[in-house]
Length: 254
Image (cartoon, rainbow, N blue to C red; front, side, top):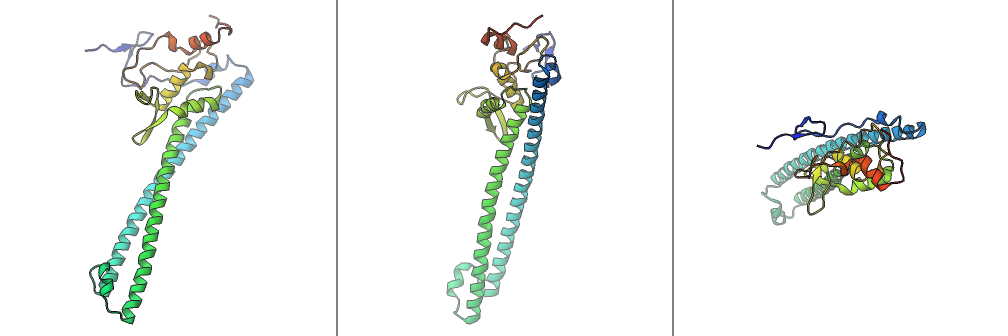
């Protein structure tokens, strides 16, 4: 039996639990000047609000979709009932027998009214179907936006637009949910969107504030949400990657 994995501090890690830690923005307060910290705090608050708003829209759209399907079902049942009643009044078993009816004035008027009602019911049914398709598309779009917003809010990205482009390109649908793909189209490595944001912060440190002494980092651990991934090494540490890409930056004091 394979022994439990250990963290760098020696503690055992439960492989069924997410290893992402919540980002504490207050840890950056001493590393940024007052304006930078204020701007960063405002950005994180804005992204959090956007995520909550998108999630609320997704729930509302889902409810609207369910209500729409219920209404379509009720309208179809009413249509069947009205059709059966009309056929019974005319003394026939199906609409195919309408052409065989005697061309009496009363029957002709009844047929005319029936055809008008039938066309109206069919038109309303088609409109409900089109509306349902639109609502389902809206639900999917809202859930994708909520996933992107949740990922953005989980990390203090310096360039929100650039980070959003990177994250959006890796958000994929898996069943009814959206996940982050840290792999490729042919060899996907799916993980929760917040874990994906942490992975993005670790592998693209240029998107993040410089990590100084005591910074918490992105919270990403290799293998998080991606079974079979290699163990984490110092090469995925945001501070180390940032320093290697910007050698002219002063080293963090110890």
